[in-house]
Image (cartoon, rainbow, N blue to C red; front, top):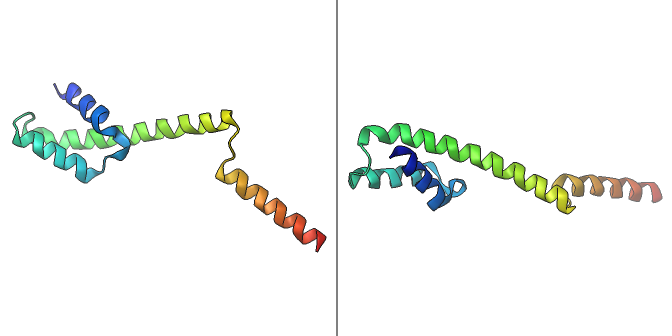
Length: 93
């Protein structure tokens, strides 16, 4: 049941948008309704937050690959070009 509950929470709400407070509130409601035991709450909270952070990293890496393949300039690319333009402007002054 715990695995299913975690999957439902992560899929239904979205791991990236969850704050610790939001997860706690949701778990409190599940305890209140008797869907999980109050003793399970803290462990489940830690596990859900950990899993959310891991998924955030995975999604960030995936987005970096998509941006790279699409040829979209990153912030670093733009900053590098801005520095280069400034260097060239300084040379022609």
